[in-house]
Image (cartoon, rainbow, N blue to C red):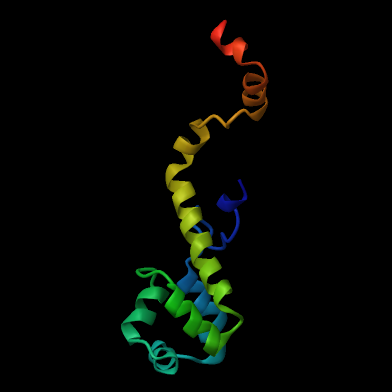
Length: 121
């Protein structure tokens, strides 16, 4: 499953937080402080601080604001958050997920085409 490997830059099993990307790839190169970014996009400084420290998710509202100010588009910011959430959940439930047997389409088609097969077994 590709989710588990993508976005891992921090030398452990945890994926990179969207706030880390915001800080390292956007704020630091542009010389933006948390307060400066918050003022520029019209949100409380606490929101940016919590995103940067991984204590708050990037919402649709924040994604729209970040995209309007920093680019590239709102979907980029939401995708960072969604990818992070999926990666963390996968890592937390990996054993459970690996135990789930995939649905067998061929077997289901055979049952549909031959309903007597199931009742005779």
